Every structure is written in C-alpha cells, then in structure tokens.
Length: 200
Image (cartoon, rainbow, N blue to C red; front, side, top):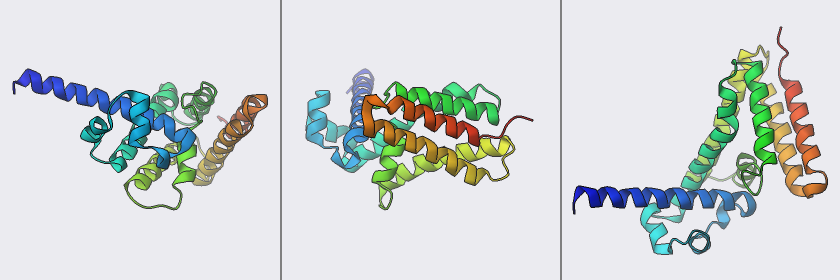
C-alpha cells in the first residue's frame, strides 16, 4: 500500500471517529452514555456498525471517545471565550457568561454534558466513569484555581457552590422546558456570579 493510500485511509478513519464520537456525545445528554449503541449510531451517522467497530474497537472505547469529544466542545464553548480575560474574578465572570450562552444555545440537545453525565456515572467504576469523573474534576479544578486567584478564602467551597448553581439551572432548564427554562438558567448564573469575590 502506498503512503498516499495509507494517509487517505487514516484521514477517513479520523473523520469517521470524530463524526461518530460527536453524535455519541449528543445522544448522551438526552439518553445517557449507557444508551449509546452501535446500531443507533449507525442509523444517525450513516456509518456501518462494522465501520464504527473498526475505528473504536469496542462500545466502551466509543463511550470514552464521546466524553473526550464533549470535553473538546465544552472547552470551545465555555472555556475558550473566557480565556482572554484577566485571571480571577473577570475570567470567572466570563466562564459563567459563556456557560449561560452554551446552555441557551443548546450546544448539546440535552443540556450541559458535564451535568448530565456526572449524575449518570456518579457511583460507577471503569474507563467510562473515570473519563466522566476526570472531566468534572478538570472543571472544578479550573473554578478553584480562578477563585483562588480572585482572592477567595475558601476556593474549594466556593467552586462547589458555583458549580452547584449551574448544575441546578441546567436541570431545571431540561425539566420544565420553554415556559421557564431561560429564567432558571439566568437565575443560576446570577447566583453563581454572586459567589465570585468582588474586585478590590
């Protein structure tokens, strides 16, 4: 096989991996990571079940890839827009504002991926649970670091509170639908912003 053929096959495999992992991440916010099946993803993506297995190897590897893809989406939608701000209070405000837009824009059809999968995998073990737990820990570490930079005397507790408000806003957004969902998202963000130390 020539180098060009090998490169082309690799590029097609990478494109298939991204497309299937992206769709799996979308499904996970509505139906859960456990609901991801080769058959349903084959129907959604047009990639055969054997083609999906070829690039992932197993359903578990596909689920882990879905978490990785969701992390990429979350970083682009929530973290990157705030990253140009000054560390501390200003960046935290940017993170909350970007999170509000991320939920309002329905980047994931079932709301915040981090919130949805944390509840699903809270007491489990294994590679998928480790990936979910790692994603949540990374988010909390970011909040704690920025709260410390902002002058919080209890950054771990404040990160807990801030994250809890956002999780609650996401849950109510999903629970009650269009009649009150945006109000609940706005309320969650207002309460989260109140956790951030004021600039002195």
